[in-house]
Length: 511
Image 1 (cartoon, rainbow, N blue to C red):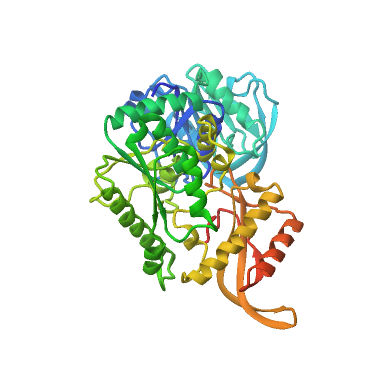
Image 2: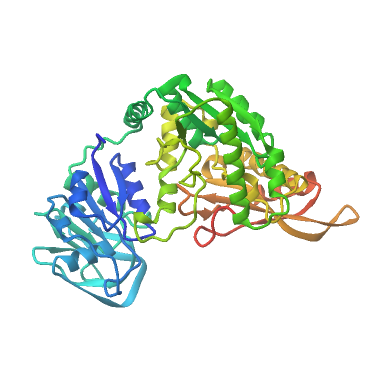
C-alpha cells in the first residue's frame, strides 16, 4: 500500500475499532492487527506508528496478553491506551498494581501541555476511564504526563523514544479533546501526512482489481444495498463488461424491493441478471423457527441459486463480495482476544465446489467510508444512504415460522415505518429503522368488535458502523403516527411496541 499506516494491536477492548475509525477520520490509514504479532512482522509493514489498545484483562491474570518487547526498540512511536499503557509500563520495567476500586466512567485528568501528546489542548480534561489496574511507577526515562484523583499516574511519556501511555480512552466520544490527542499522536509524534482519502482509495482499488483479475471474468451478487452497489460500480469501472451482476429475489425482501432494485441498476447501466427464486426459498424455510437454521437454509439456497445461474452464464474466475472491515473484525477472532460476536454471511463460508477467487475491494473499509466512496463514485443518495438490510432479509425480522401471509403483514408494516421515518426527516439520522413481526397475538378492540391479532415491534437505532448502537429517541408524535397507520392499514396487526434496547446487550436484528 502506498499510504502511510498506523497499526493498532488489539488486546480485546470494545473500543479498539473506534481507535481505527477516529484516525481514519483524520485521513490517517489505520489497521487492526493481532497482539501476538512479532516486531519483525510489524517492521515489514513499515508503520509510522503503533497503538496498543485497551482490553478486559489484568496483568495479574494468568495468561493475560503480552507483547514482543522488541516492538519498543523499532524506532516507531507507540501509544499505549489503558491495558496498553499498563503493558508498556510492565514490559519496560515500571510497576503496575491492582487498584483498590475499579475506575469506570467519567474522570477528570490534569495533563502536561509541554508533552507533545497534549499540545494545544486544555490542561484539565473530562475523560472516559475503564480500568481495574493502575501504574505505581513509570519506567525509567518516562515522565508522568497526566494525573487524576484516583490515578496519580494517568499518563506517561518518553518523548525522546516516541513512547506514550494513557490510562483513559481518547477514542471514546465521552473524552474531551480525545480526537485532538489522537491527532497530536498521528501528526506531531508520528509525522502523518493525512494521505488517506476516498479519491486515492479509488485509484488504488482500480489498479489492484485490474492486477488481480487480469483478463478474467467476475460475477457479483447484488443485494441493492450500498455495499454491493459500490463494489459493482467500482468493478465495472475497473473491468467493464467482464463483470456480471446477479440479483436473487429470495422472497424475503421488503415491499416492492425486487422491482425497485432492478429499475435502479438498469439506470446505472450495470450488467444485471435477475433471478426470482422466492418459491424455492419459502419451500425450504417452511415450518423452520430456529434462527440459525433459517440463516443456514437461506445461505445454502442462495449459493445453489447463484451457482446455477452463474454456470448458465458461462465460466467465471472471480466472485466479488461487499465484505466490510467490521464483518472481518467480528468474524475472525485472530484479530485479537475479543470474543467473536456472530458469523457473517459474506465472510468465508463459500463451499469448496465454488471454485471462485474472491474479490473484496471494500474489505478494509468501515460503513461510513463506503458511503463516502459511493459519493465519490457519483452514486445518488438513494444508493449511498440506503439503510443496511440483513442478508437473510425479513426472515430475521419475522420471529417464528415464515409464511407468505405473515411475510405480507411484515412487509406492509415495515413500509409504513420507512415512509413515516422519511417523512419526518429521520431516515439519514438512523442507522436502521424497521418493523419486527412477533409470534404474539393479543386481544384488541377495533370498532365494536374484539380482535385477536399479531404484535409488531418497531426497531430504530443510531450508530456509526453497526459495531455498537443506541436505540433512537424518536419523537412521540412520529411513533404515534406509525402505530396508528399500522393498526389501521395492516389488517392482522392490532398492537405496536417500541424496542428500547441498545447494542450491547441486544443485537440490532432480533434473530
